[in-house]
Every structure is written in structure tokens, then in C-alpha cells.
Amino acid sequence: MKLLITAGPTREPLDPVRFLSNRSSGKMGYALAEEAAARGHEVTLISGPVALQPPKNAQVVRVVTAADMLAAVKLHLKKCDVLIMAAAVADWRPARVGKRKMKKGGAQRLTLELQPTPDILKSIGKLKGRRIFVGFAAETHNLRAEAKRKLREKNLDLIVANDVTVPGAGFEVETNCVTIFDAQSEEQWPLLAKRDVAERILDRIEDLGKF
Image (cartoon, rainbow, N blue to C red; front, side):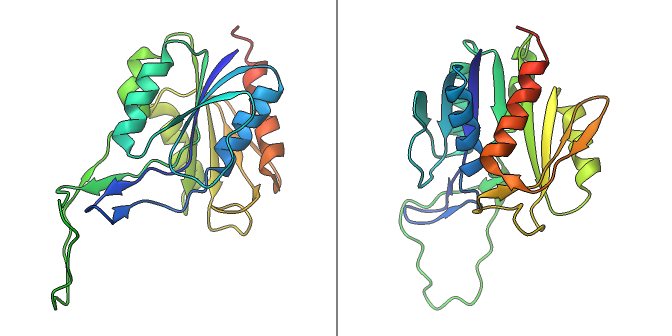
């Protein structure tokens, strides 16, 4: 199979030295890319800014913003069988980006106007065809409801959800504790190393048997 995997955070610039982002390390997406390549699949990894070594035998495409990631996904989607959206894409970006570093200048308060970033899965939904789409949902509450909503609204085959408030299941750690949903069922897995989670996710994808 040919897999297109996204990983890491995106960064939305505020000025030349500051940005909005999140705590994603990219470890889950990189584990998926490493496991898929080890199984002999052809892997393209679209990566936000991370401090990780590139996976062996995977093509890595570097991006920064959500718009960059959307453009890269659109470019590479046509030659993949499976899309796994493991990236933690920033939901908001500053409405205006300063050309110079913003100075404090004695101000006691600063108000930022934000606008939504593009929803990558919704933007490419009409291009899905026979491809398998897998999403991720990092939540702090209402995990089951949010995962099922995203599964339905984004036309996904599978969604992998985790509660980032659970010790060992959030960002910047080597483990994860997830529940995987499809249209008919859900399965909660115990706390596992992220590479072991990647193995189980890829087992599910391969078992779908569309190729």
C-alpha cells in the first residue's frame, strides 16, 4: 500500500519571532511512518516542525503552517491508498501577521484576533474515493462523543482518540492510551508504547482489505 501520513504540530505566525502552536511532538505520526515502512509499504510523511530523526525508507515533506500542510496533502493524496492524519493541526491562526517583532511598549494587555485554520480532512473529503481515511482526536473531555462526531462529519473509516489529560497518553511522551472507532464499533486499548499503538492501527488498516 501507499500511505500518506501527517505528523507533528503546525505553527501559525504572529510576527517574525512568535507563533501559535501546540504541544505535539510528532512521535505518534513518526511511529506510524516507521512501522508502515518496516512492513514494506510506500510511505510519504508530511511533518510539521519536530525534533525527530526522519524515519528510514520514508519520503519526508516538511511544512510549517496548516495551509502548508493542506497544500502538501492535496499534492500527494492522488498517489496514496491510505491517508492517516496524525498531525495536531492548529485550529486557529492570527488574523494579522506583524511584519516586525511586536514590542511590549509598556502595555499591560494585548488582544489577538484569531481566525480558523483550514480543516484539512473536510477540505479533501470529496477526493476520498476508495481511499482509507484515518483521523486522530486528542481530547480533554467528551472523548467518545467527539470521536464519533468527527468520524461521521469527516467521512473517516477509522478515528483514533485519546484523552490527553490521562498520564502517559498525552503529548511529548513515549506511550499512548487510545480508543479506536469505526462506524460500527469501538475498542479501547491499554497504555502502550507508541510503536505498539502504531502496529495495532496498521493491523486494522490492513484488515480493511480494500486493496
